Length: 397
Image 1 (cartoon, rainbow, N blue to C red):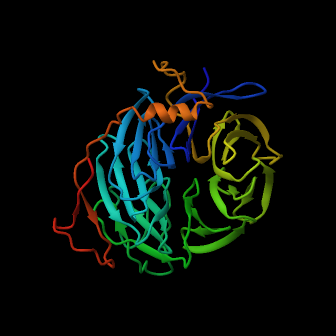
Image 2 (cartoon, rainbow, N blue to C red; image 1 turned 180 degrees about the horizontal axis):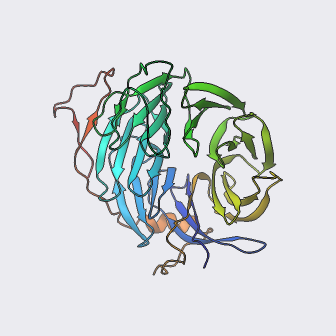
Image 3 (spheres, helix red, strand yellow; image 1 turned 135 degrees about the horizontal axis):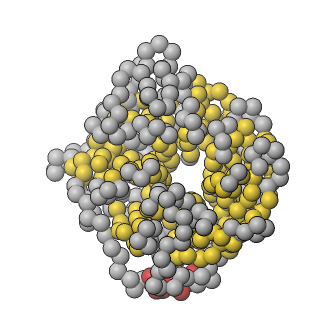
């Protein structure tokens, strides 16, 4: 039995789609596995872990799905505003960023919010966790890039990690920057980038990170904290994905996906993926080749076979029409599950039943996860508003 692969997509129609991928010798198929109307506004972010799927929305909630039990697990209610970004670190933590400027760290064991920090004065537009799990990056509408030291890692004067080399210094000589830790809420290293960045992402080996501003990708080296190269895309960039430590897939406000080398700044390959702009890209590996998954406003999710050695034009493996305006995409590929899970008692909704799903789900009661009150940590240079309750933010339950 081959690996279990599901394509998870969010849409403007407030629906989250799940499609089970069946691999074939010539053509792959994606069959509707579930279609769930979990939110009351458009889905803005999606993330996957070994067991869970998380979706964020403009309705200010994060919905959690248990893919092992095949049930809706509940909702996390802490952000005030759109959930703009989500990312799991392994199977232990979920990080979320929102329009309210908060960066939240959640435990997947009991879905407790371990820490909520005022990361940016504006919206948190993107976040990325270092492969070691000890460092996170965020960008926001306050035109800053911020470094966060995560979980149990305690910051010293330099950035060191035994598993992944985080570089001996962030700048020449003494670090000279403010940092904070997501457990005790200390100040962070802040880099002014003079423009609003929309995406930040670590390379797979964690020695570089990229920042997307409009139509350009700035590549930084962690050890020297310097800008090493810049890649210019013809259109505004909407999504990126590292395929290797040096090859980056770039999608934007057109129908073309480009594979670029971040070291040489050259376009290695480009192809027309959709009829309209590509909203999101993700990837996974099967056997000895890479599969790039693309989602577009035209409603299609497509799977492309890539040979990263020869970089020949990609081959379309399969596609599915969701009939919805897609906003985000993620691949769920658990490492421990090698056979399809038990069938759900309720029949999965097909791609052509979007309107029916909207009507049906309005009648369903949504389950909520009750989480305890969490203290919001304000950064040192911010001027927090006085609150009657001593500065503690009450969670919606």
